[in-house]
Length: 161
Image (cartoon, rainbow, N blue to C red; front, top):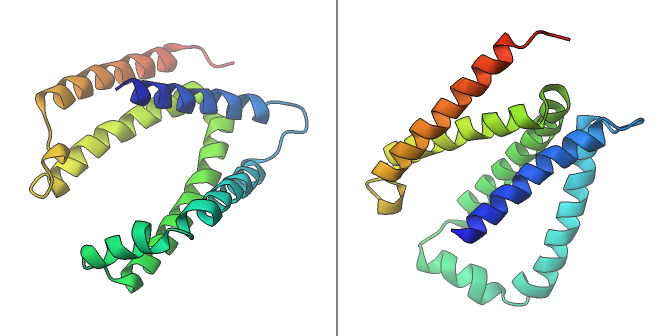
């Protein structure tokens, strides 16, 4: 639970950092920032893959795919779809942070978390118990929804500059 909290704080810091960078004079566009972050992430992942994944390919990848009865064709198609969706997400994310601000993006992430709870419960509960909607998730959803409504109401009442 502690690591989840640390991860959440890191993501929150990422929103603030992205907004700060995009408000500096000569700031990159959302697309440019996404490209730069993507290039750095690709390099970091590439180094990890070169030193860990590829040398251990049989154990960490191939054996698991075979054990699960996986289909390499489906894995490649899904990987390409994931990369494409992440690229689109990154460009839109940086544009959204620049135009809406870090706090608003954080509030939208809360909406996404609630949606994830609901959709994963509907689609995966029968297959994996950890995906089911629980009392704690229900309470969390109500608290987060209340916060979203309060924030939206306060923002709507705030005079435009």
